[in-house]
Image 1 (cartoon, helix red, strand yellow):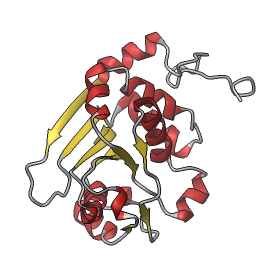
Image 2 (tube, helix red, strand yellow; image 1 turned 90 degrees about the vertical axis):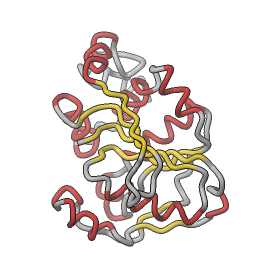
Image 3 (cartoon, one colour; image 1 turned 45 degrees about the vertical axis):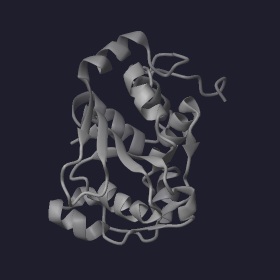
Length: 210
């Protein structure tokens, strides 16, 4: 596949086997945050939120390209950058399993892939932890969250997800991965459902925070 589609840096598009050249890595380093927020809001069902970038500038462009312009190789750019940080690598390595926020069957058919699933599988592979893409699923199609305000997002996402095979998550430390954290409604609703499986901890991991 690499002969037909040679690996390129996700930022400058020049050939690079790591999907991120040194020059662009420095650019991303200058914009990265790597911030961990401990949840102190009793209305949230997750324990922590870790994000890498603010949703702006070059990162916003890359996220939009990744989601809507079929530049699927960017999942390797995001993952390789994230896991280069030894501190973050060790934090994530302490978790047992990673779960991507699911999208509906209709959306996946239209897009051809779940952008969060590609990243989560690559992270799991490099960390050598479990990737669980089957326990949490989206049982109905809803309005795009980006078209709604904060209150509308909470109402829109309510009841959109379901969980199965709860035993696979019991007493485990879970990474719940999404691409963008805006109001947190989607991640909080997923966390609420996952809580039914009695996990030890839920950490929301996002590439960006709006």
